Length: 292
Image (cartoon, rainbow, N blue to C red; front, side, top):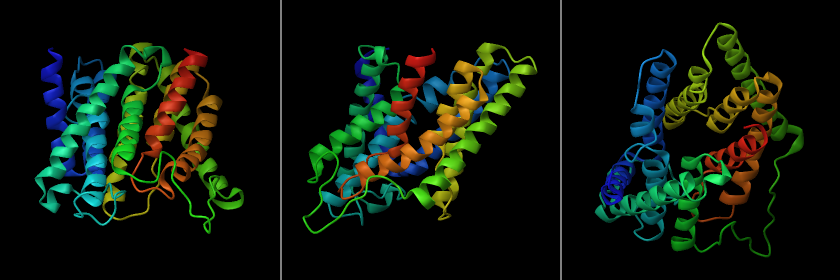
């Protein structure tokens, strides 16, 4: 398809994603990913994962990234939002056309980064949507923000980049490790049950989608854990290695890395950079380079 038409589609996806809001858009992505992934595992030819869940409309690199960038614009440039890091609020409700247009523009940037990571930069073997989200929101920070890439502390402020070892780090490591372990166990059960390798290859998409759908509870105000940076890479690790211990280790490590990424990129900062996308970008690249 003509790249100009695809860029037009990305603009539409970002505009609509901003109207829905970043997290609501991502929940829709999860719904499509689970549906399409299950159909693929069942042996049904399905195009919805590539063209809907990770395409120009609901792809994280378009709808989510565009909406998150639009939130920064709405707060910092239009004074229409309480926080530039508010990725829960549907921006349709602020009633500002320029904010939604900003979402469309940054979705086009996200699509450009996505294309770059599946072509010229494919040697990095990373997750293209996750990498596109990270770099798009970094561009947003450099354009709209004033705190620099990793934030800025005043001389009288202290900043901790590492989580507290005795409570938060241990809690997240345990959560991530057990989540990764059970994902590996389920993958092993499906493999032992006779699932073909090409069907098992779709398993990470289903795990990603379930984690994305679970954010509906976060959107509703419940303090549930965010887990797609755990479930997706852990499933990828199992598919690549067939080893449940490696899946568990990836889950534990990624859960802690998520905290570190949040501290580095979202503390003492004035825009939002997505910690799960950051961790997915790094971990998928490493897993592919080591095991693929």
